[in-house]
Length: 399
Image (tube, rainbow, N blue to C red; front, side, top):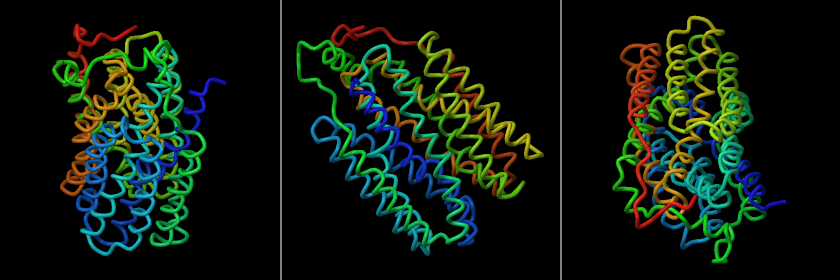
């Protein structure tokens, strides 16, 4: 068996843990912290903002270290920091403590999440199977929401926030560690006569990529796209529970993640035959539609329909961002190119939960989700005007 597929399996597991205790569980933490501490939604939402902001900046550092430090060392360190910070977040008594531990959790989580996983996959799969490999790997992001998030909500409900967070921290570290030690490896790029090595090292330089209009158009579009997406995800549990009860809230998260998985797997096949740009526009439109439906939903069924549309879109958009950049700029400086673009998009990721929380406090959750829908549709307008840029002579992408 080609070893790259073992990397897919291993990173699927790591992303399941990373997104389950991080990305998708944030809405559960938000709900419990607001309930137990009495702090406003907007104030607690800022902890989620810090989680993503620190994670985005940390991803730039991780991208620079990938070529000089063992990727396994980076991931083990991230798993330890992430697990320890989750466990320590069990003792928070003030907003300052909430902010500190969730910021540290973002730093640890970024070392085992999207920058590392997409770098490994794009290097192990420089050819035609990249979209399939990336879609399968990133499905772990959604699988974490299906398996870990509902279980986490149940555990917190039974055992309380403090005890549960200590268990979550331990699980974050001890589930990640064996996968990293037993499976994760860098691709074989040292053999200069290897076609795999040549494809892996081909592509644009970091400097050339930053001088292209395409890089900035796509990065800015994902600011709005991810702001709408992460804001919508982080408040979905709370939106559903306050309107329709705990069972609907848990089911909404499951529908979101199931739609994300099925949509992404289908999308990984679709982008082998259709342009990524057109598919990205369609997914961003679907995301705007789903968020709008959640905003106006007056019944559990309508809210679940919106969660399904939203999930189908977000599963693909998370995959399309790295895939699109890798297709245009190649592998040579991919970690730094994607890490910077991802960090730029974190402006939206970090502000999305806070913006929706702020609008909620001033108006309602309906207004929050309609705001998120508008952000997604604005991203569509930028995608429409984006075009792949011509290759610089100094760093051609080998096809």
